[in-house]
Image 1: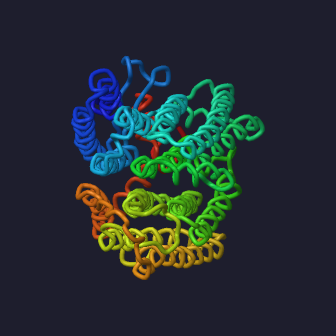
Image 2: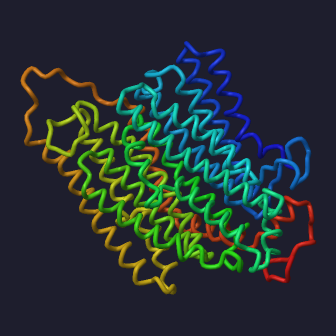
Image 3: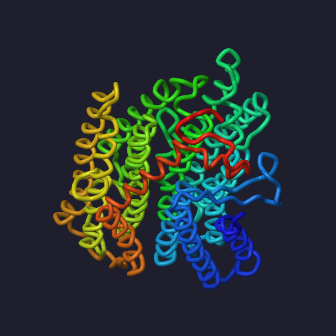
Length: 514
């Protein structure tokens, strides 16, 4: 049993209450401990990812209670990769929050930030569905507090909408868990994989209903159309660092779908056959279309980026819905790209806000630091729109390749290529309006000089852009690693044997039964 795997959950869980109890009124101390916590998370995440990179499955049994009776945390290639991605994202978001002063506009930003990390890490590492629900609720509570950070009527209204939609998802999640437990008597995912496989087609009504409910819950988290209504206002109105951190939130939904529907409800499982192609693929295609049209129609930069996130999730879910090793690998490569690109764009929105009355896409007087902000926007927009040479283009090619031999190939290629063209036009219109047409607008007479964004703010965004460049340059090693993750997901024997402590008793991936 590895004790290191619980540290990504414990570290923020201890840092957050310390900040509340001992440093509530001292922003400098809060920043020091919050930054130390995030740096420690990165170190632990790197260690876990390196350990799991050879296919090792890490296990931690809380209270030393064995599965399926006890609570377990499990680290394989997929979960440790997501933990590392979250930790690195958190570092740059936190740097921006400190550099821009956003963290000083409310008393509890750093504590809520740490609780948010705790929920995200727990969702990626948990080995049973009930604790996935628990960590989803931790996410919901902390994210609501972060959303209304610094106050405001509009922000509060968007936060209430966000909470209501996610409470609906939580209710459906409980119904699904109740149905699954009634049918199988367990919620441990490794144990469920065995028990669901034994259910006959004639007695599969209950488990099919549960699998559909779970898919709806995860689709809400992933902001798939028509369950996406909470995202545009929530992300657009949230403080910039919060919206940037939320770039990983929709990926929690995608992760849950990948985990549950490759392990518990495997693609070749008879009782849930056709679920992915019937429900998930059409919703993903429509999400990509809605996201791209939203980019073109958006009247403000923050709304444009929010719809870009919806479109990127549509792209991810198209690949996931095919449920082949090739498509899952492509989806994971694109998840890394879209998380970094989305976070960078939300932070750039805040840079563009400096010196402007609003983020409306109308010609206004030039802003402070406009050349550097425009350059960062140009690179991030190219990445999000999927133009060469950055990782968005590579990820898009991988997804197109994964869909080439499918029956829905024409729809997949047509919608992806069409959405890409629309996105390019939308981002081009926004950039030219914000940064080029501003040259023709004179500032008001006697207008006070507006301060430029701080150097640390630019460093934070440049760091995310640098990671996108690295993801492009290292596309070969990155795609080979996502191939290894997909191979492990579609051969879950090691995962199940480690969790259930039954080495050698389950079949290998060649399939001779459990």
